[in-house]
Image 1 (cartoon, rainbow, N blue to C red):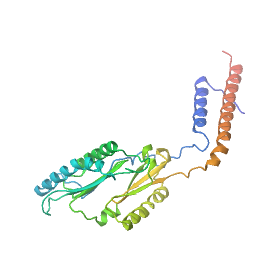
Image 2 (image 1 turned 180 degrees about the vertical axis):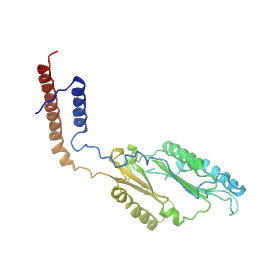
Image 3 (image 1 turned 90 degrees about the vertical axis):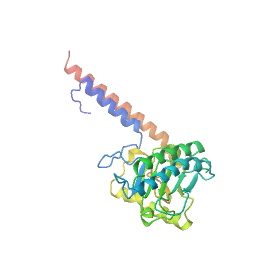
Image 4 (image 1 turned 60 degrees about the horizontal axis):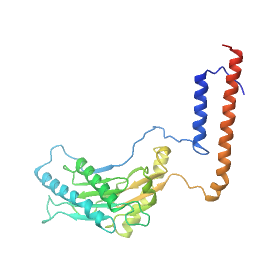
Length: 277
């Protein structure tokens, strides 16, 4: 190996780089997207229309009903066997009537990520998000966190814009790994299947557009008003490959570290012989 005249600092830097590369292990190279963005983490908000700066009198009455529903929704959903609930304001139909619904992902499933306390906490935070971000003149809105979903509207019927909406974020919370997909309780089987099929097309499109950064997690969560879908970014290694290549990979990393460190020390020794103090 060719040796330059390294200083103590440069040799130390090189040693640190070698150790960092070794710590990454086989196949652990970081894949960064072109923009290097670190965005797309929860919560996500969808307001339709965007909040107005000066709500009208009718909008203020509607907002009051929305806030009342959002305040009661977390406890109602956490107490339900499915971890979801739908509520509506009292009185006759009108411009100020409001509907709200919330759901916790994976609630009640075997080894699921949500307990009643976690469900209520997540929905309370989501309700605060949508109340602060959308509940002005917005007649319909939704918000998503890593473990739950909350929405409100001026009608109980879904709209085309809601069905078309898809948001996404990196799965950075280990408890959500127990859940693959889920649909909201008030959707039919056909609506559920359509939502999941359309959501499955989002991640390939993000990959083709170079919008994903592989360092943020092992999966992407795609959400809509009707469903939740967790899409792994990496194919899991078969167990037999893990057993076969695991020890070999560790040996390779250790051998590489020893070789590189020995090379650095050799270069330092040669440099000192040619440049005696």
